[in-house]
Length: 262
Length: 190
Image (cartoon, rainbow over all chains, first blue to last red; front, side, top):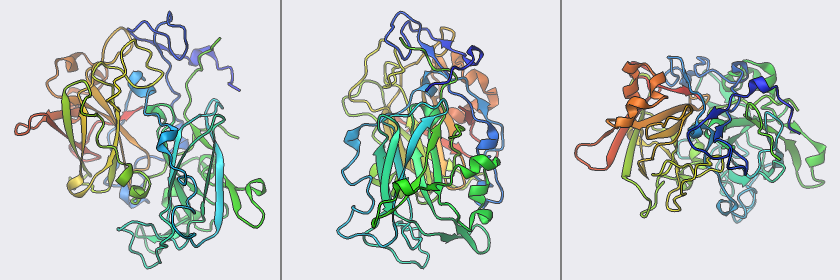
């Protein structure tokens, strides 16, 4: 349920257009209800030198804070016509089954008011069980799997639930520092409801011994926020004699206040 | 569960598998879309001026009437069925990618004012831990002088947000994004 937010957090901006916001009442002014801003500790900084690639790719000048307008509170939306039948089952996209430990990854997409984010596009990509991506620039000596491309997409349902079937990705080496290995992960991309809610992240697996050594994972200052990227093994999602289940809930930014609708 | 927003992580070097390639959208406007046609050629550079060949750009814009195809845009203006408004593409050699679109109309901001025509842009790449948000305006547009967002940007940095027309190819506009360095693009906290 939507928490009753203090009125003082609401800073609706009136626009010139006399139309209702997010309600059927066209008599009300067009209100742009801003999205809540991040607590910076829960997000990585742009510049994090232990992750070497950030050094030449991170802005050094402070960001300019942009009060939200229609441009920021709108964004691309997607429909079921953009989802193919096997898009959410990465083990069924080729003639044969991929090698690896079959898993289900499932969870909910909510905003930070606790409201489910419905019908939102969730895209994932990952390497195969041997730790190799189906990509020309991944040439490390591990085998490709002819039955695994490693990409999927789905829409969240009316309660924000989503579900993918895939195989457990392997850890893989990279050249950030000597003997560098990425913990096993699945990349996630979500649009949410607005330009402001765009999120690209990575989901990790519980108990990975590589966590203390990974600068990408450790770039998030807040420990709780960091650990939230680790999925939870869940017996309820585990299917007998078939697959292990992992839960990964995703929270997108919500509005500073939710409009009350009659 | 704890309702702090999920932390961002880099898109990494292999996002083409999931997000671009056949899932790129470089044609944002169909042939019948209303408005002035724009081919927008973008380049992305790092802090030493090297082109970034593995970045991804995402664009979001209003149609020629200044209407976003989104339920929270409640302006009484028409949706253009020939206009998508959303694009995404990976850069290639030379850090280049391009989009086929139209010049957006003006959309409202607060205080009974209108914004100048602009596109909303996300830049993602390996080495970019969280999406970088910026805007593209059109150099020389008379509305730029009254745009409330440009007014927040120090005058000597506004040029980084301006697409410029290619003098040899009518309808082609160019903009460079510098993630860092002397010519650093203005990025916004959205």
